[in-house]
Length: 422
Image 1 (cartoon, rainbow, N blue to C red):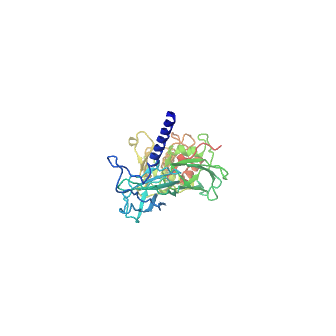
Image 2 (image 1 turned 90 degrees about the horizontal axis):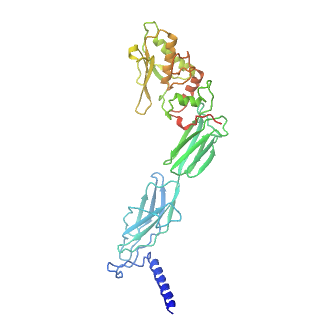
Image 3 (image 1 turned 135 degrees about the horizontal axis):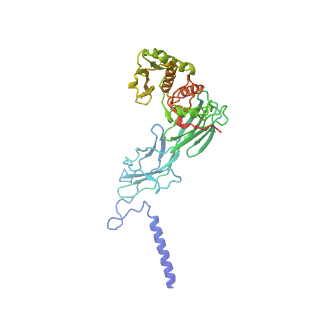
């Protein structure tokens, strides 16, 4: 008999605990006063918000919650405060959801209200709900959960041939964000996705079934905006000497191994040299003019144009005595504008040469620097760092300058794979 009473008592305790748990969220059970006495007075919880809706506003990049202010009770028109919570998880858990820190003050019952959630995560569904409280501490039921799709970012890449500007069709493109997309460029050279979400996106493009063999490229973007990018595809090309694996590897060396190379804002570049004949009867101006014209002729590009006075933007040549040259035969000094683009290049050449052919080669070399070519470690190149220099520009350097000039300004060399394609 004693055992049976114990079982009954234990069952009753469980029942009371269950009833107490079920009443934790019961709006009809107001909290007791400070002395533990049952509450008196306002015993009615506020109404539940019945028409919560969410909408995404692309211009601001935020989500707007809208609802009609509910009534508290017969005596109180307004509720005291709102508890607003949201999450990107489904199904929505009220207790695990993010609670907004600054909900709006409740309005008169029946009036429209809104709240804006800024800086929402793109490419996901957002869920939200509201609960109302009155001054007596009663709270309403949680409103029905509303949701809205926050669209992801759009991404588009267009591939063109660096030399011709023609679209590159058939290239393989892999785009990785939350998901991986394996795509092929169309006849317009373009691939795109419209629902990318963060925090980053990685792109890789390879020749694939394109008509020519191109160097692959890869770039990663912080996914915080829509992106539309264009890539000049660099065709794989061999060179005439074993100094470099291919033309792109040569360009990388000639650019000073810069990930981003800034060139002259426009071509041709104004070029100026003073009239000067030295004590050995060498006409420096004539040789310099011939060197500038040779770069134009060899490359088929308008690289240099003669200026009648030192240009504010362009190349200025000076012919100086050995004491001013620090033991150098030729020096090119650069100055750039505030954004890093070339502004004035000053070419200084020692004025005591007696060998016209040697002087001409040095002028070709220094003007090559103003095209933004660094030294190239092959004695057959005019940009070789040591003398004697060859008498003319090599065919490799001609193609190099043609490629460099065709690429957009600035040149993003760091995105390309400089090794030879398999």
